[in-house]
Structures are given as C-alpha cells and as structure tokens.
Image (cartoon, rainbow, N blue to C red; front, side, top):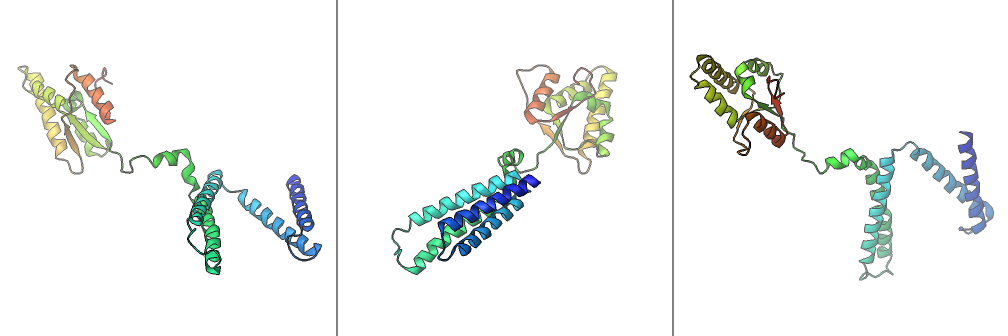
Length: 238
C-alpha cells in the first residue's frame, strides 16, 4: 500500500515538474504547476477506478476506442470537399474526433464481457433451444415400465422410436411363439399408450443404416447422428 502511495506521489511530482518546465499555458510557473497537478490527480483518480475493472472491460474499452478513432479519422479524411476555414466545419470535425472514440470506449467497456472465450463462441452457435432426444430400443418398450417413467415426467426431451425398432417389435408380435407374441403386442400397446400421453412428444424416425445389420449398432449410430441418448435395459447394449 505504501509503495503505491510513493509511486503516485512521484508521478504527480513528475507531471507537475514537466508542466511547469514546458509552460503549455500563458502564465507563470504556479499556473502551469497547478495545471500539472490537476492533470496528475485526474489520471490517478482514473487509475484507482480502473484498478477494480475486469480485464475484459479494459480490453473492450481499448478496442472500442480504437474502432471509434478509426471511424472518426475515416470521416475526417472524407470531408476533403468541405471548407475547413469555416468555424462550423472545424466544430463538426472536433466533435467527431471527440464523440466517436468516447462512444467506442464506453460501449466497448460495457460489452467487454463478450470477449470471454465462452461467450464469444456462443455468438456463433444456434440461439434456438437445443432439443434433447431419447431413443427407445425394443427391450425397453417391451419391458413396459418406460410408460410409467414417461408419465411421471422424469424422462424429459423428445422420445424417438426408430423405424427399424418398430419393425423388430412387429416381428416379435407376429411370432409363432405365444410368449414372444404376447411380449411384442404388449410393447406395441405400451408405445401406443405413450403416444397418447399429453405433453409427450414422440417421433418415429425413418433414418436407417442399410450397411449395418445389427439393430443395436443401428441404435448407436442413430444416437451419434442425432446427438441423443439411448434408453435401454439391455445389459450388452448399455
């Protein structure tokens, strides 16, 4: 703390000495020293205020100031047709040089948080809410308990039933084995029940992978494609 006070005191003294030595104002040494003191105190005050500012705000302010200054210079370069001897033209030129960098500095400092990597990357992402896909396999549909889980609202997102799972379910329901046939039909009933639930979105996906024969591998590939999660009670698939 004492070190900062010493450094600031030396800075104020250096500014006062330089101003008194150069004499930027018409007047004596006291007047110019007073000007140096006022400038030094203003700079120290700004430094103490900036000390608690976020780094992103400082960078944003610098970038905004630079952009504002560049725009002001571009506008000034484009006024070659104007009569620079007129007071109004001089006033407008001065106003542009002062106002645009100031606006850039203020706006850049306020929006400096967008320089954070996470927020900066989010500018290029789709702002729409991302859908969550839950892909149901044959085993979990036949099991039947998925209907109660969905009904309680525990399983959020869009439920996806692939067409190849429906075919497998229908194949089981048409089996000559009575046990398999009953399981398959129960699965179709469970699926029909889920589709009729209010507030539950069920999508029948036509996406297929002809080069893949096994249904489990098809499910994995579909989950990768849709960035979804497979809902299953099959130990091997899990």
